Image (cartoon, rainbow, N blue to C red; front, top):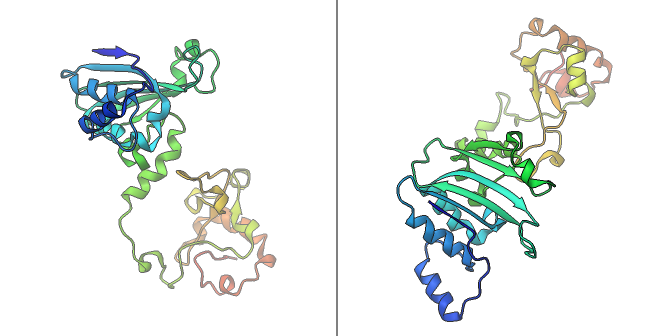
Length: 273
């Protein structure tokens, strides 16, 4: 078992730096911080099932300089806890910190317990509450760009897993039977672009009401913010007798739908009287 608080930002002579970079070339990206060296060396000294736990700078969570160290830990260890502590952990130290705990054992299907206390006052008591932690499969860390060690907003990263699992597509794959691009451009938006309240109030059939993205403002760096946005999506092959509530909802907008393609039923989204 290795537990401690390694030196942060220790000063090295140019000769010492060259030596450390050469001896630890597997995990040195650009610059070396003393905590990186200690973390790497100690990780290699762990016996089987040995436990490592340290408080180190939070930069290991996200900075590109620590990419290779993150990859080393993900590949070779079971990372059991990642806790982002934020500022004011050590008196007089102006550096955010985090707690990392990992074990020298099989990490297949292992769950990483994480917590983010950067904006929490009374961290000691908050860390005793299980509700302030969540968990995810360690495999997720392999799929996140730069192998970031994420400690919150876990669900927002699920889109990345979907992207990774999508096979290569051709142009024909994203065209429908009419050679139209698969997307929605309804002639009269209030008829087809709805919110949760409208969906529930009119008891619209779930089979044809889809979560949707209505604009680029919903596309974030690593996830989609769906907000309260739904799209009524029907095709020419649908049996409209099975979705009477949707038909009734759309019918009230009949006079507002003027698009020729919609009226002639050439598009994926159509009006059914």
